[in-house]
Length: 139
Image (cartoon, rainbow, N blue to C red; front, side, top):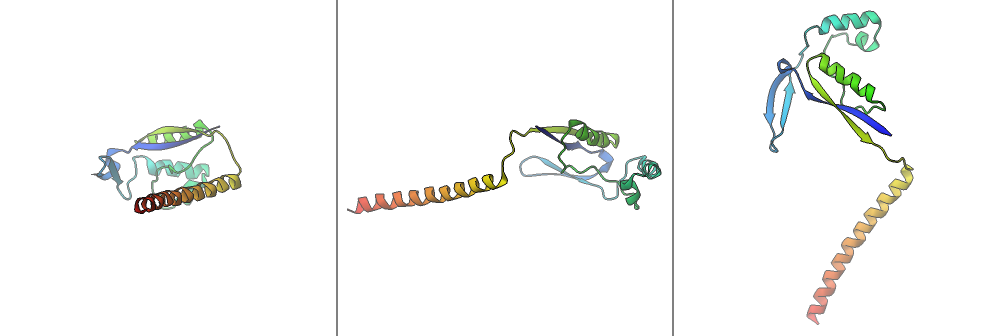
């Protein structure tokens, strides 16, 4: 099974308040508060006319980018969000993940517990080995 999401890769220049360079060389763009792309108010009015609930609930008329947190079961759903970003002057890319198997959550949790316990055992065994070497050196 494939799962999809999208990632915004570029925002319109006039939407960016400032850009800061991080320690690792990457950059973080800070968007202007209250920024709206040209044509947003007309688009919102049109959507209200169609009865779109999200538009009706957006009484302040504020602009927002689609959430990048969602995961979609179809590529076309992610492409729709990508198209919205591009419509308002940004750019986005589609990401895909292969999901190989679904397993019982209780089995996976039990495996994690076993792995943590084994890690503790290994750590304690290493300490025992050190103590035994020290004891052999003293004899």
